[in-house]
Image 1: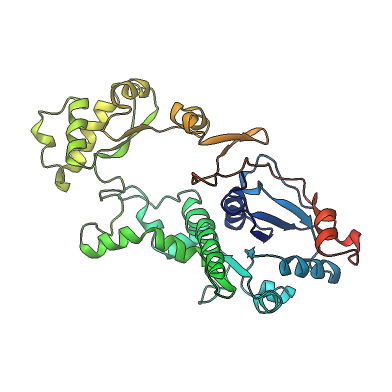
Image 2 (image 1 turned 135 degrees about the vertical axis):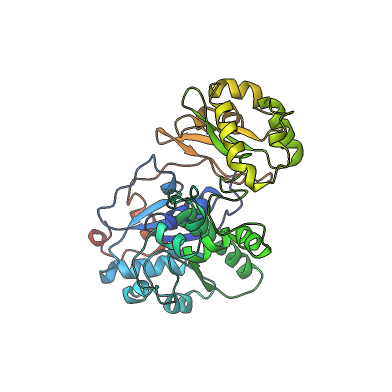
Length: 370
């Protein structure tokens, strides 16, 4: 199968984190992603973010390498880069020049702070971007410091996936007759967007700005994680009244009046303590036997080593083995144009001769490309 993005060519300027994530998503679904790597680059076949690529080694600071990069961009439908604002312009690869040569080019720019604004030229990482958007403040236990959610929210959900959406939307606009354009994807913007529901709830007065005290942030006893007798953990999400009633039945507190009035926040701390005592009386496996695949809204909290082996994940092929390691499988799933079988990260530069020979010609001096 060719995939939903078959026939689309993307030039990716190698970077870290969200840019490669976007390239992975596009490549997973059939786009031809040609990654321009720096001389000396090494790619790991176990790295999901580098799969489904062709790799070309170019020294874009040399005239011949720059000419090769420009020639490739002239053949492309889209481009993705993750440098600080102004770097691509200084390299001679800015959007004005490339769009003049290729008016239908969708030029995707991935940054933390965005192309404009007071912070635009400052260094930063995921933790900084989600701090400024208000997201980091919402994650953590009441009275304790905020907890960085690894780099899932800024780099990937609010970064790479935002850029992937922007690229597909831009490519669709071109298909419908619009010109090429620049996509300014900023992790501050993207992480703020992910928090849209939280901002709406804050405005409506249904949540507070105090983390760890609300419905979805661990404040509610029926929406939290609990440790079991064996030191393993489980997750409970019994929000709806019928699910909460089933939770009470499964934990033996159906007739306990202390658990009535589900949304009485004043009672939440005491209820959480009582549930913690109950869950600590059995192992995770025992609670799975009692609650798994019921409407309690329950799941065991699996480690990254355990998750690929769980029966549900195995039944859906949520994980694949590629490059000798487990990787998350391409998603989402398409009924008519399913994602092609993923290919592991290539050897860096393995497509240099093939692609430069086919697209650029023999005028480029090979030693400067490899």
